[in-house]
Image 1: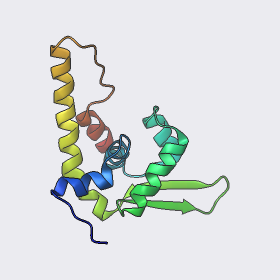
Image 2: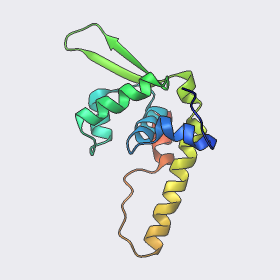
Image 3: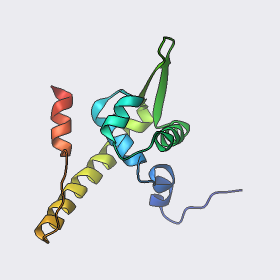
Image 4: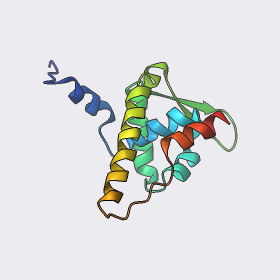
Length: 127
């Protein structure tokens, strides 16, 4: 059956439309390669089951690579594919907009805490 999209963003959301997929992609964008346990540290709110599920879906879409090292204990690293790197401008815009939104919430008197700014992560990556 032919897929029909009424607007391009529908196709984008079909691939990255969940609570965790954009977060996973942003971390990969900033950190390069990440091991499963590192994801758990970087994304404390995600369960192991959900993390595994989201990583598999992103791998099936061709956005991330999964590299398994033949060693004991097992070592698995994830990284963006060249196709996944094409998401970088979109991910950066989402982060920038989110930070502006957080500032607006603060201006409206809401108590909001941002643990790391996008620019801070990018600087850490370069160091």
